Amino acid sequence: AQTVTQSQPEMSVQEAETVTLSCTYDTSESDYYLFWYKQPPSRQMILVIRQEAYKQQNATENRFSVNFQKAAKSFSLKISDSQLGDAAMYFCAYRSASGGSNYKLTFGKGTLLTVNP
Amino acid sequence: ETGVTQTPRHLVMGMTNKKSLKCEQHLGHNAMYWYKQSAKKPLELMFVYNFKEQTENNSVPSRFSPECPNSSHLFLHLHTLQPEDSALYLCASSQTSGGALGQFFGPGTRLTVL
Image (cartoon, rainbow over all chains, first blue to last red; front, side, top):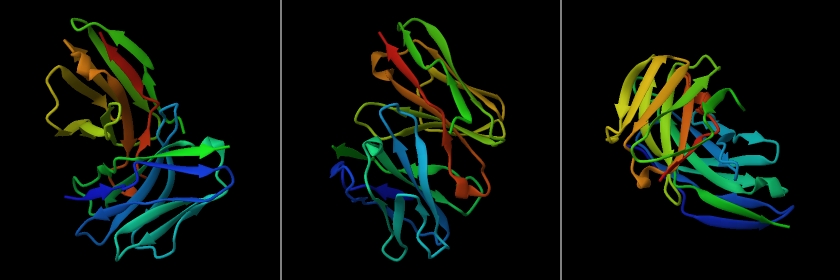
């Protein structure tokens, strides 16, 4: 079974600075998808960024980018120019690409990000 | 993204009440999920439905009864709940094939059991 580990329960960053949230995962599969979700105080889970394992290029979405290291099974999220609205719980998630019944997401325990003005 | 809606947003119920949570997705997905999120705990997957068929029940107590009449609607029927069932209940949907898009979540129902 796949596992997702977020080793930082809490992180903080100054507004306009850059912060990196870490995520590692364990899998024996070669093809899969990785995601970062954001859950602000409103509790709505929002998909921030996604990465397909067969793509070597790191995904980017505006101020959000990932550092995907497939061999190391690492998938960190970098937030540049942090804004107050970035304060939230961030979840890393894994999904198999093998089809069948393996379409569920496996989530990490989350990292609570605080943005200081 | 609000392609997944949940009602009610807040619910307070006694232990002897019966209530239902509703989820509707407008994204054309075929899989739907119920999650429980308690304070300071990781997300817990409760049930999974694929094309209206239940494909997973993660040892959820029988006081939680899911229903999926079609691929767009998912219900969670609640009866004789316990105070420890107080939590945020999240619904999500996805495609079971072409998984690059991930799951899309509703805003959740904040449940308080007195």
